[in-house]
Each structure stands twice: as structure tokens, then as C-alpha cells.
Image (tube, rainbow, N blue to C red; front, side):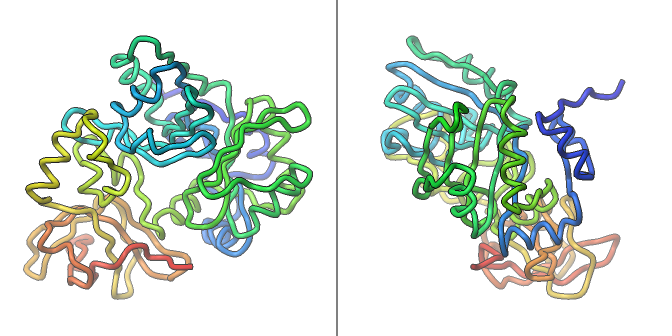
Length: 360
């Protein structure tokens, strides 16, 4: 029996615009409207909007919420002031990544977790198993919609759709009412461009979507979202980040605070930091004309010995070259190291590249 896919509150709008719908993380979502390259470049040059209603919204409240979250997540909640957000990880006891997420601090004791679509049930179950007394956990994912507006013109677009309001500073959060409609705004994103994420009750999704289209913001699909994040070397949960890999191996130690005290997985990370890593997630650039690299392709050395497997890969629309990510042995995880990608028995020349691939 085929899986019954969830539909975005904007499903009708996507279809009316000719969006090509595909299954993604249990949802039916648009992969593109015109072309991935065109949508990708529009975000780099102007401003695009992505439907992110498939992502989960989990609210945490209570006097002990901050202290409890600090034991469940890697970044230091004590450093997160009201009206700001930060990137963080939820780990298992082995230090592996259950999910990477954004934590919004809406008040002294009120928080919002924005989690990956494929992880909502898993995250809520994990948090529920470890819930502290006096802390409440509410999964409101089905009641909210989300839009990611990305591109250099995002500040002007925000001002236009909110009658002159200005965006908060980078990673700043506004929880506000506009014409009787609640929206939660955070100035962040997944593309390397300026932008903001807008969360609203699902019933208001079409209102904000159409307001953006009236400002000539281009609708973009999952394809461009993936190529934009890959150019920035931002990891994809379930591919670059898994329960078998730690944030340190993924090169994301900046979002891990080992000084704050114990949290789930901290002992493993502390040991890794002391003893050193066996592998690291590295950027790889194809150096000859070839088809774009794909996840699952094997990375080998000059003798054909396996070094790792691509976790992400594709064509960079900005560079016009094949780019990828892979975990490599530490002695090979150095910029400009020559490697090869094995494709149908052929070795394609490549090299370890500096992150990110895209520089403004």
C-alpha cells in the first residue's frame, strides 16, 4: 500500500502555479516551478520564497524549560536572549545527530523548536521520554505553515508586506500581530543569502504567499533549496547528518558548547575532541567535465582504494561545476587533496575544496 502523503496548506497554490509535486519526508511538495537553475539564480540575484510548511513547530514552556533544553541540545541556551534564535543539535547518547534544528526564544520561559519534517514524531517522542517536571511540550506542527523568503531584496519585501516594518537583526525573532494575523519572524535561512522565515497559522498561509507573489517574489521548490544549501556546504539531515555521525565529525563544533555542562551525548563529543577525529565531512569539487556527482557515489584514492561515500552531490548552478560532500579519513581531509569519484567503473578527477563553495 502506498504512503498517504501530507499536503501543505499551500497545496492548491502550488498546483495552480504549475509546481511539479514530488514526495518528500512524508509530504507532497513542489520540487520546482520553472527550473531548478532559474529558481536558484533568482534567489542569488533577487528574492525567492520556499514553502517550508512541512517543517515541525514544537513549543516548550515552563520555569525549568531553559535548563532542561540545555541538557537536551548542544548549543548553550543560557546564551540565547529573548527575541533571538540559534542553530543547534539534538543528539543520542552516542553523540549521533537525531536532528538539527533552530531554537527560538520567544520569552524567558517560552521556546519554539523548528524541526525537520522527517523528524517531528521522532523528536517529540525523544523529548517526551526525557521531559522534566514543570516543563510542557506541545507539538503544533499541523496547525502552522512556514515560508522561507531568501535573497538580497528580502528586507524590502518584508517591509512591503508588513506596511513598513523592518526585519530584526540576524537571528533575531519577532512574534507579532499584523492586521489581526499572528506571525513569527526570524532573520535566518538556508541559502547563504539575506532572508527571513515566516511562520503563521495554517489558515493564513495563502494570504502571506499571495502577498509575496504580488511583490514579485519568485516561488521556488525543493530542488533550488537543495542546490543553494549545498553551495554553502550546509548539511542535510538524514544524509550529511545521521545518528551515526557527531556534529564534530560534520565540522559543526561551533554549535556545540562543551563548557556549559553535561547534555545528552556530551561525553562522547568531549572524548572525540580530546582523542581526535577519524573522519571529517569535507567539500569535494569535480575537476573534469563529467555528469554531476550524486549521493552514494564512492570516493577513492589514486589506487582505487575506497575513502568514503558522497553524502550530498549535484551541479552548482553558480559555479557550473559538480560539487559534493563526503566523510573522509582525517589524513585525506585537507584542502586541495586529490581524490576520485567512482562512477560506473570510471574514476572522475576531483579535489577536496574549501568550504563553502559559494562566496558572495
